[in-house]
Length: 79
Image 1 (tube, rainbow, N blue to C red):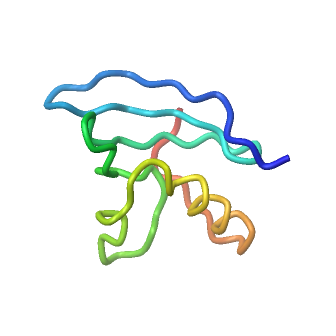
Image 2: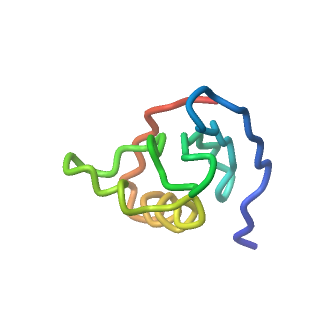
Image 3: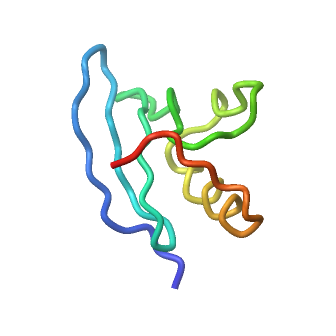
């Protein structure tokens, strides 16, 4: 089963949330805008062009899963 589990949030200043979640057994932490859930810091390396700026939190499990499957996951924020 490919469920996302263990979602936890922590309020940060300036309307941001620190969200910890698990995708297929891998724990990730992302910082998102508290109102829009737009990704501010994905917690994983997604390249050098700031591609994450178009993502919202709901897309992150798929992004992380694809990186796991292609052996390209590079976690930059640890829980």
